[in-house]
Structures are given as structure tokens and as C-alpha cells.
Image (tube, one colour):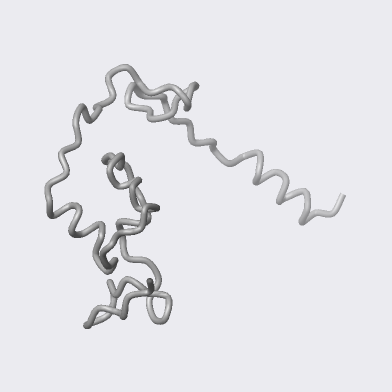
Length: 104
């Protein structure tokens, strides 16, 4: 066997292996589809008027029926509520100094 290869194989088997112990704070554990029993939960999500103002920024009235999902929107992440791409793709004007012209 090649001497260099033999040294490389010896080093691989001689390296220590890092072992971590499982703690009670694991997120997924063995059942990632099951929410942990003591995980915090939002009981009710209050949406002030400012929430709707921010969510509908750059959208002109009358609002399209496709935005009715905002009524049922909870505290989870939605890409519709955050600025997206810049430049000509910023049809809602979130990145511009001046609002973009309405797309509809």
C-alpha cells in the first residue's frame, strides 16, 4: 500500500469524534412533525389597523379579492408582508424613495 495513503487512513481513524448529549431543549427530536407539549403557542393574534396598512402598502383600492387571505392571516410568516425584490420588480414601491405607480 502507498505510504502516503497509509498515513492518511491512519489519521482518519485516529481523529477524535465529537459526541454531544441530547438535551431536553431539542426542537425536532425524534418526531419533527409533532409539536413539543410545552412549546409556547399564540392563543389570539390581534391585528391593529396599522398591520393592515403595512400589509396593503403599495396596493390601491379597490383591493383585489385575492387579498382576502389577509383576514385569516395569523402570526406566521408570509412573504407578501415583507419587501421583496428591488428595481423594476418592486411593483409595491417598498424599496423606492417614492411609491411605484400602481400595477393594477
